[in-house]
Image 1 (cartoon, helix red, strand yellow):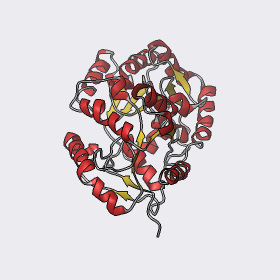
Image 2 (cartoon, one colour):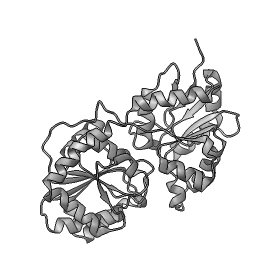
Image 3 (cartoon, one colour):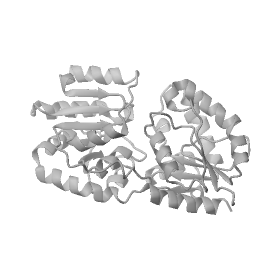
Image 4 (cartoon, helix red, strand yellow):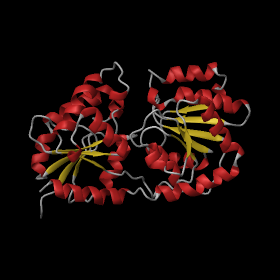
Length: 347
C-alpha cells in the first residue's frame, strides 16, 4: 500500500469545538483516511484552557514528530499554524487570520502569536489560507512568499445545516466569541436603537463567555436598557445550532475583521437572512446574498436591523439567495482540492 500523503494533526479538536476546531473536525472527516490519516490526542484542545494550550504546544514539539515518522506520511498537515520547529518535519498549515497581530493584546499568548505562529508560517513548506483576505495579510504583514501561499475554500456540514421550514421569531442571532474585533459593543448600541421602536425584537448571543469581555458587554446591555432583550448562551450542540439558525430572524456578523466567517456560511445554508460586515473576508463568503453592514456606523447597523422587521421582500430575497450561495462551499470539494495539492507538495 502506498504511503500516506500527510498525517493530520487533530490536537486542536475537543469535545466542544468552535471555530478552528469545527473546521479541523469537518475537514478531517472529508479527507480520504488512506491518504491523510489523523491523530487525535485528548486533553490538548481549548476545552482544557491555558493548560491544554501549553500541553498541546509541548506535544507538538516533542511527540508529534515521532508520530509523523511512524506514519510514513510525506507531510504533516495541521489545520492551524502549529507545527514542530526543530525536527525537520515538512509541514502544510492552514492560516485562518492574523487577528492577534492586527489587534495585539497583552495576554499570556502574546509570545505565541508574535513569535511562534509567524515562525511556523515562514518555515512551513506551504501555507493554506482560508480566504484571499487572509492570504494578502500573511504575505503583506509577515512577508511569506506568494509562491508558498494558496487559498483553500472552506465548507460547511451540508447534511446537518439546511432549511427546516420553521416559523421565524423576532430574535437576531450572533454566533461567535466576545473578543473586541467581533464589534459587539457597537452591535448592542445599534440593537438598542432598533429595539426602541420594536417591543418584540430580541438578541441572542451564542459563544464562549470570556471573563475579560463578556461581563463588560453584559454591563453595557444593562446601561442601554436592553438587558431583558438579550440572551447569552456559552455553547450549543450542533442540533440546537440548527434549530436556532432556522428560527432566527437573521444572523448578524458586525466584525471589524474576519479571516473567513463560518457562521455566515452556516446561516446562508439554512436560508437565514445574514447581515454581514464589509470588513475582511466576509464579502468573499456572502457575495450578494447578505445585507452589508458598515462595522463602524452604529446608525447604519440599526437601520439594517430594522429592515429585517419591516421589509418582507428583502427577507424573502435573502432567504432564497443564501442556500444557493452556500452551495458553492463544500467540504468534499475542499478535501479533493487539498488532496491534489498535497500530492504536488509530496513530490
